[in-house]
Length: 202
Image 1: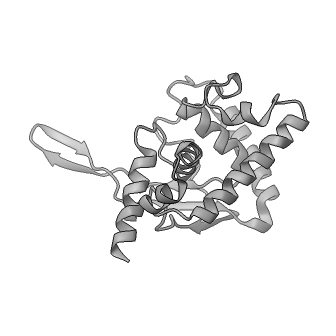
Image 2: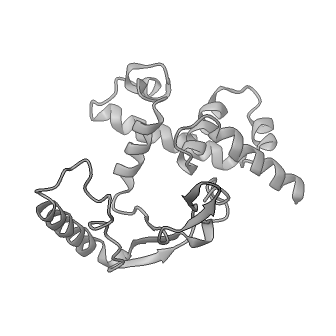
């Protein structure tokens, strides 16, 4: 259905508009926030190619998670967690803090991105670095059965890098690429899903 696909593509742009960090999670959060406030929720879902049933389930799951935070004393009420202007959500519009929270929650299931070697093109007056194309980027994530081993290996390599560069200026460390970790040991190659908001942006 071309019309449905058009609405879905438009929704991806709309729900990530203005975001410093473009992410599927950002799009979902923005969609849910608006879903809660609109009067005609079914029309809202129809306009943006969303499933009304899935959105209702997501809202219910959100409230259950918030109730857990209330029970443990992190929030005074579920309403406090939902209301974006509440003290608990004082950083809700700080996209970098929100993105950091995403990363903390997903770690170590985070993709490692390997870029191709630097290449330059000749232009009038000199050379400029050529941007990598999407096809040249490679993504890797820890293998499920080796997450703990991979985590320990990463910590050991980080410690070695710190000790190796202890006498270097930390502001310039790695500028020559000498301590960039290109190893893919314990990692498996993964790909951006076509439904992702970032599929056409990498």
